[in-house]
Figure 1: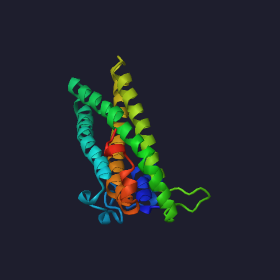
Figure 2: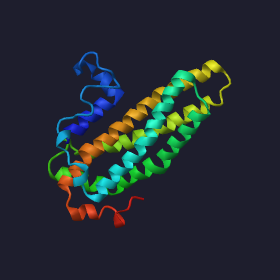
Figure 3: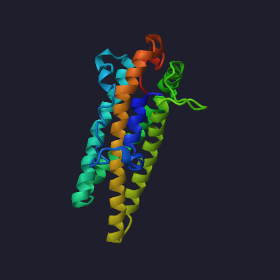
Length: 223
């Protein structure tokens, strides 16, 4: 199994990091573990301009969403400092709309096209777990997809409930939880896109033929 992605997942998951903190360096932050964005082998990834157009289009999707994600993180910081306001509410509405209209379709497209063929290729090459049912790096990314949707739903509901709570103290508790989960979601999204951009898509470029990549999307269109 691709150890780079597994290592990334373990470090990205706050629960796993806490459980495994005995093997982490002392003094590291759960939101900034060492070498998180520099896993072994990532520096040998395929550059963007050498990737197949389908893989470039998937990376372009990520780049476009990073803009929305950055606005979301800035809005979370504003809530911590000053509480919610109409400007923050508008940013959140746009962010959750982007999750629904961009991220979810993007993830479903990967699950329908790229993931199955690349998982099969990784198993053929012996890059999988040694258990009774082989798992690959694709399973890590599938877990990410599920967690992203679940976390987004939780956070959306937290903010919706907070807006209807008249008691200021109770509203503050809910907002604090929403902001904390929002930070977890933001980290997960950034790490997930990093894994795909710098590890997964490089594996696809190396292990799949041009014909296989051509056949992933009709007319090379993401929809």
